Length: 397
Ligand code: NDP
Image (tube, rainbow, N blue to C red):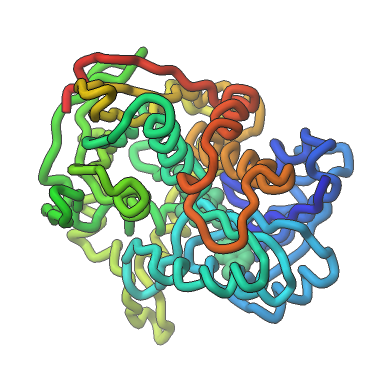
């Protein structure tokens, strides 16, 4: 039993709140805090049963966080605000003796850079304080990292080739919308591609490498090689990897909009002066794009995310594909949000549960693949993200 503080009341925060509230035996008290308290209140009302208390907090401000945490005394913080807040929340956790969990690595606002170095630098301080920090506990990073650890533990002597494949075959009926925070999403998908091969990072132009891949129950979808943050920790934690890549599906419509957004300067992350006021174009764009948390009502179809792995078992080559398919409509029925928020929020809840049950508890800062994957895999089946395995198949990659 433990007390949990959820920070962030967007699409992912909504799912975390719904899921945590159902587990009375693990989460005794729940506080949902975010920049806009009304959003927390609306989520608490939708969950019902007076299970969730709410508060306003500016998570960029360590003192405000410390005050909130000293008042509520959580055992763990689930950070589902934005990556910009990771370090301030980690600081507040250290000051108040609280465990930490997030779903996205820290990013400086003025540079779209996905690197763990800032958060890994906290390892010794968390260790000395006897506190656990769990990094990247959404779906990707998160479940994909646990899938990799599970494959390495049970099916391979060495894993050599890893391809993480992320397909969203859903249709929300809008000409252009992002499935999670537009600012973070656009920063992520417009950067250069990057993958790991033979001990070094190979950079590509954005969306330069692509091919159709077949997704189970969905069929072929054009998939684009992009850089994704879990690659950094996975190649470090699984040094036998000769190559590690990440593929994501995009529709032509989406890519055309994205190109226009970039060409007209609306993806810029540096400030411009407008009517005497400094604005950052991508932040303004977020304000006019559909809110990802509200796409759910008309969203149809599935996501399919998994890991395709090739390696060696008992001296022989082996292939393995582990994946989850998640329905946008079912996610909406259960939590009022679409499958991208759902597939991120459920693992965050499970990670916090693993911590409170003492299963994923070790002082220091760790990526999820550094914990035992088995209880987490079992929980995925139980809490709404069942997974499937295919052995010795053509991986197409
Ligand atoms: P949203 O933009 O929908 O929600 C973010 C929430 O954080 C909002 O409620 C926002 O408040 C709040 N927030 C922002 N800044 C602050 C601040 N300074 N203080 C307090 N609260 C703040 O994003 P999502 O729910 O879509 O995504 C949440 C996180 O999940 C992101 O970090 C994203 O990168 C990550 N993610 C991870 C995935 C994975 O698989 N690992 C996949 C998808 C997302 P306000 O409402 O006032 O703006």
